[in-house]
Structure formats: structure tokens, C-alpha cells
Image (cartoon, rainbow, N blue to C red; front, side):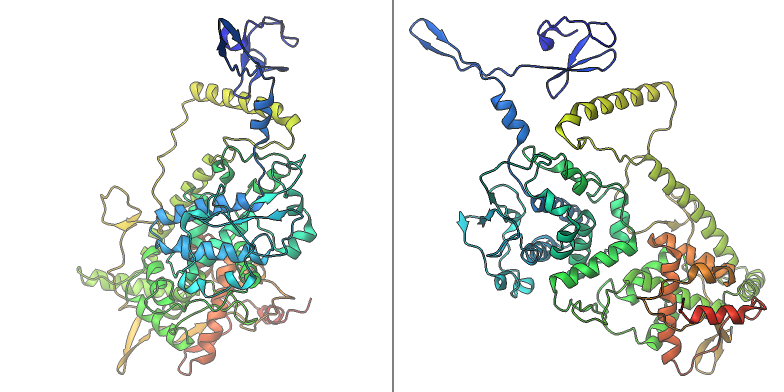
Length: 600
């Protein structure tokens, strides 16, 4: 027993009967044998000594400094989200995002949000206390009118203050003055308002998924190449702070009680949920027309499909057919997003690019579980006749991708199993439960160390830098290699020269029912029609759903949207069939009618 820490305390533990006391980091006494925590705490002594002649005078304060340190300073929930957004922006800057992203775009969006939710930059704040707005380099200032933040600063960014607007200290966008202390049930002042469903809906209060939605909107405004699927993958890999992001808060910002329900993260939001949050947030902020996604932007379908062709290890020649489909569907021009138009939804740029590739594969190989294998046999015969032949063989590509896909899925499951969800700074619902939470954590850490010493569990692989690609294709023998590269192969066995242009060797194109459903009354029908679709087509949907981290139904619905534009506007389209001829069930006509009509 450490006599200096315990001060000679030698009472017997009432639970195990031993004398083996220790002092935790919080100053509480606990038994090292049974981990029993007692009420005794280490005294905090502050001795102010001065000499008066030959006399020594000392004063001992009992708990005043400690109580002040535990309570921390008064802070608001929006300040916590401000710190999280700051760290997320810095992580994106470290990945190569343009330097203007943080101050010129995301900071401006955050100011607009604070004004729209009446938490700052307004003369009528939503809270009872008074706001004190501060700016960098000056003291306090009056509340800014609503038109000041909503002005053309989004375009010029002349009002950017740098990191001063992101800091929660003297450069905070808002300060709160009130006569009372922090809430008894939380460390922040206004945690109660964030947990009221009515206020959350009416005021559009911030949440952890909305921080990612705000970053996604800022990336779109800056026309960065990071898609929504990339953003979620970086969050899952831990490159962007999201899980336990509150651990980076300053020491004086104490979190407990209701704060844990606001900042604690138990799961990563899905692609569809985050897309809806971004759409609703853009409408709430009343954002103007976004900068157009032109041909020189990496988010344009022409360049984005080239990236996914490389990811899927498909031939480069397939990109010409993708561009022809884009031209027929009227998608080669610039794409933009206007939140205030009801018929202008937020585009799925990444899923749309995957849908274009799938349609090109259906156009060339039909994907009806028969035609693609016949074309693969033709390509195999050509390669046998010509030893230097490089015809693309779909069967060979399928086996290569299936092996890499199985390995990547297993690696992803291992990473999920190794992921640490428990924070270094645990959250507790009340101060009474703090000792219990700390005791459980101490026991869990000691058990984990004991099991690690006894077991020969493999060491976790070192963290890899963030990358936009899941697979790496190249020559055999490389250090990181998922399979041979097939980008150089040709499509001569799948196309025919007809007149002055190349046409698909397959003259027919099949598709499911293309009648559009009403989103308010009907959802995805993929679960219903999946059993009737060709297996190769379903496998291709699963492949791109894995690459994008979305559900196969999301990719399926986006394929239908692009097919409506492609088949509806193309005059020289191939003969379209509702279902593949060789795989059509006998009672498919009845199922087809139910898939078109959505009355339930």
C-alpha cells in the first residue's frame, strides 16, 4: 500500500476484510483487492504560507477549489457541436481538402445554422439567457441582424475570422450569462431543450448525424471529390472524429447526465439516413443554388464513373459506352442542387455513377444468366486462337472480383469486431453514478489486460492512411495486391461493327417495370422482385453496394431512375424487354402488375 497516497489510512475493508487501499485519479479511495469504493476522499490542501517575524501562518481550504474544478465553466450544447465540427473540418483538411473549405464554407454554414435556429446572430435568442457575441480581435459586440450572416459572404467569404470563430473560449460565437449555474442534471446549460421532441422539430436543433450532414453539404459546395459514401467510410475507419468525439472537449467543459444522450454515439448513421438529413438541413438553412458540377469537377458522372470502373477492375473501353448512355439520358451537362425547389432533390452522385456502369454492363452483356456466359466463351476462344489476345472475359473477371470481394468483406468484419466503442472518458448519467462507472471501467481494463497476457490473440494491424479505393489491382508480386489488373483488356467479343459505329453484340435490353412510384406512399420494391431477377445482375448490385456502403435496394432504385431517362429519351434504343426471356417465370405477368402499381 502506498502510504504517501493514502496518508496512513489503515481501516479494514468492509467487503473483503483486507487493508490494501489505493487512490484513483478522481481522489477517491478504493480497495485494490475487491475494487470497493468508499466515501473517503483525498483531502486537497492549499497552503498559503507567509512569514510574520518568526511566526508561520497557514490556511487550509476544504474542498473549494476541488468543487469549482469539478463543476467546470458554463457552456452550451452548440459550443460542443462547434468543437466537433472544428475537429471534423481539420481531419478533412489533413486528407487534402482545399484550405478554403473550413473557414469559407463550413464556418459560414455553421453561422447560418446558429442564426436560423436562433442560438446566435439574432436579437431574439431561443434561450432565456442573454447572448454575448464576440468577434476575433475585439470584445463584445451587439447581436448581428439576420441579413448580415445570410448575405453574400457565402460567395466572397470576406467575413471569415479563421480559427477564432471555432474556439470556445474568447472567440466563441456565443456566450451565455445567467444568474444560475449549470443544470443539475447535465453539465451544459441548455441540454433540456435538446431532449424535448417538440423543440428539436421546431428549432432544427443539432445532432451528431447532422454534423456529418453539414460537412457533406460543405463538401458539395466546395465541389470536393469526397462523396457521401467516402465520408461514411472515413468515419467508420476513424479518420474523421465521430465516435467519442466529445473526448476532445476542453477540460473545463464537463459532460454528464443529459449531455450523454446528446453526444454519445452508439452507431454510425446509414447512407440513406445521412442523405435525408443533408437534404432537410439544406432546406432548413434555405441555401441558394449550389455551384454546378461541371465536366472539370470530380463529382461529375463522367469522371466519377471512371473512378468506379477502376475500382471494379473493369476495362477502360467501357467508359466510352457509359458516356454514350449519359448522352442519351441527358446527363452529360452540368448537375446542380437547388434546395428551395421541391423537384430538385439532393443527387446521389456516387450511386448514380454506379447505376450508369451497371446499365452499360447490361447493354453489352445483357446479364440474364445466359448471354454473358456465351460471350465469355467467345472471348475465351479468341484468346486461345491468339496467344497475345486480350479480350475481356466476364467469367474470369467474375472469379477475380468474387475472391477479392470475399477477402474484403472478411477484413471489414474483422475491423468492425476490433473497433473500440467505449471511450477513454466515460460518460455518466449523474454524479452519484460516477464512482460506479469508474469502478466498472477499472475492472474491465484489468480483465482485458489479464486475458491479453493469457491468450495469444493476433495483434491488430496498423492503421492505414485514408484512401478512396477499397481494392488495389496490379501485377502479381506487389506488396498490396487484390488481383491482376484487367483495365487494359478490350471488348471486341461483346461489340460488333455496324456501319460507321460500334454496336453491342447483344441486340436486346431487358429491364424491370419502369413505372415510377410515389415516394410518399411507396418504398423500394427490391425485396419483392429480387427473387425474379437474374443472379448475375443481383451479384453486380451487391458488388457496388459493398463498394459504396449502401443497401442493394438503393443501387437498384437508382438504376431504375437512370433507365427511365435512358430508355425514354433514346430513339435508337435497343429492343427493350420487361424481363429476360430465358429466365421469365410463368406467373411473372401478375407480379409485374403488382410491381408497377403501388396501391396497398
